[in-house]
Image (tube, rainbow, N blue to C red; front, side, top):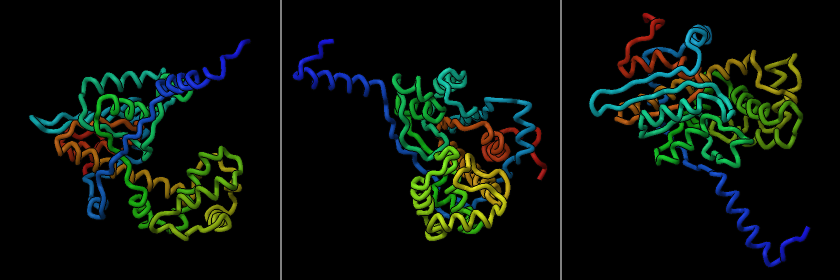
Length: 302
C-alpha cells in the first residue's frame, strides 16, 4: 500500500482530529450548588423520607419510571421529577421518554444526580460508552442553553452532616471504600488506594482521621473483625456500621434534593430533574407537602 507523502500527513492528521472532535462533545457546564450554611442544612422537612420497606411497596406497585409533576398557578414555578433506572444503554426507552418530556415541559433549569461536571458524548462515543441519564440531561441542557444545577450537597456539607452521627474514622472509611471498591473492581491496587485515601479525606473534619493504609487496616478490623480484606472488596459493605453511614448519606442527600427542588420551584423556575426512581419515591411525601400537592395515599398521619 502506497502511503501519503510526508507533506500530506499534517493535513490528514488535522482532518482526522476535526472528525474525532466533531463526534465527541465534552460538556463542562459546572453544576451550581443552591444551598449552603447550617440554617439550610438543618431545616426540618414536614415528612421524613420513605424507608426501604415503604419504598419497595410503591416501587412494586408503580414500577419505573416514577414521575412526580407539579404545575404552579399563573407565573408560579413547575417541577417535573423523573425517576428512572440507571442504565448505560442508548436503546433504553426511558431516554426517548426523557427527551419527549423535556420538549413538552420547556425547562428553565435542569437537575441531575452527581457532582460530575464533565460529561463526554457524541456519535463516536455513545455507541461504546452508552448514554446514562445524567449525561443526557447535560446534553439537553447544553443544546438548549438551559442552566444546569446539581442535586447533590457539597461534599464538605455532606461530611459535616455525617459527623453528627458517626466518628471521623467511620465516615472517612466509608467515603474512601465506596470509591475504591468501585474503581478497583475487586483487585488490590495499592497506588489507587493511596490516591483515593488522600483525596477523600482532604475535607474539613476528616483530615488526619486515616493518614495511611495502615490506619485503614486498623479501622477496617475494628468495624469488621471477621470481614475479608478491604483491598479486594468489589462493592461497599451492605451490613455493619458502613451500611449505616451509607443509609445516612442517602438521607442527607435526599433531604437536600427536596430543598433544592422546592427552592427553585418557589422561585418560579420550571425545574426538570432526572434521578434514580428510588429518590423520587423516598422524597415524595415531603415534596407533595411543600409544593401544596395532594397527599400520597400512604402519607403518614403525623
